[in-house]
Length: 198
Image (cartoon, rainbow, N blue to C red; front, side, top):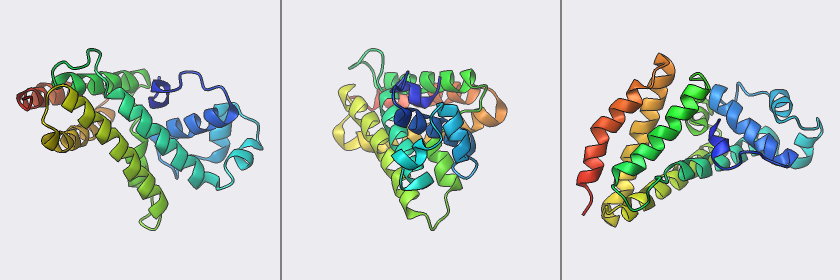
């Protein structure tokens, strides 16, 4: 399972498969390490479909993959029991990433982070797409925190802290091939989130 599976378990059209394939490969090896031929092969799409669906080339494809990543990240913030404790939002995020990491044998990382690390400073378009994906994800986390009782004025800031800590934990998990950093994140940050509930 990959981040794209959170939204589209079985993409139907070649276009959907290409975007999902790009998201998966970018999450594993960054945009520069993701070849278009590999994207097409993984998507099981016709060779000419890239030019047909993505006249803007690789940049358009990666930008759309980042949009999908933002939506998948937002969906991963939904706790199993809405309107519960704020820590349940963190539990939902941690459990989702635990599954993605272990099922991929720690090969899957965040495609947004991979793009930011990989993208040239001159590529403002990809940086903007990455920023939009993070903003979408942060907004969804903040909304869930508000639903769980966190003050609106504080929810956005806490959501940013949650995502920053989560991204760091994902990276360390991949390096160590161990989910302990996610467990540590949950143990340390869950009480902070619950204390923020009014």
